[in-house]
Amino acid sequence: MNEVLLSLSFAYVFLASLLLLTLIFSRLAWILKAGLIVVVLVFYWMSYEGWKESQGWPTYSDLPDRFLLHFAVIEEPDEETGLEGNIYIWLSDLKNLELAEQPRAYRLEYTQEIHGKVSEALREIQNGSLQLGIINPQSELPAIESKKKRSGQKYLGLEFVKLPDPALPEK
Image (cartoon, rainbow, N blue to C red; front, side):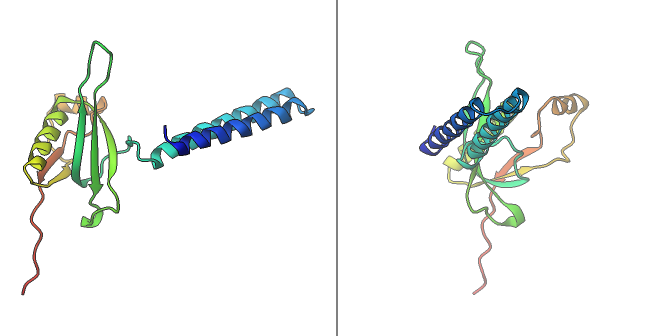
């Protein structure tokens, strides 16, 4: 937890304690007092979640259709500790074929298929070949695979290809 989140937490605890002191000595109905306490707690939770999104923690939102892969970390599932596997990807969105201003971290559920594709893309990056990620939603899937997709697997059409060399202007 960084300093900003810690200071925000202290600020909300201070405001919640002021609210509690005010409610203790006021003559409002108890149902209204309970409602105000719940509202303060909900706002605290909402702001905490919002700050996590803005502080660079991996997002659960969908991957962009085209992106430049920078790096990835793969956490394999571990049955002994009960750890669910995750794949963390750091990428830049290529909306309108232009790089986003800053890279973003994404978190994906672990599957062996995505693990293999990401591992291969990381090997290519280490060899000096930039990797372009493409999500192809029209990839043909057999009936068994489509059932997997409905159970939570979103990125069956994920592919990594070598980033083409830039076109140089004519002399």
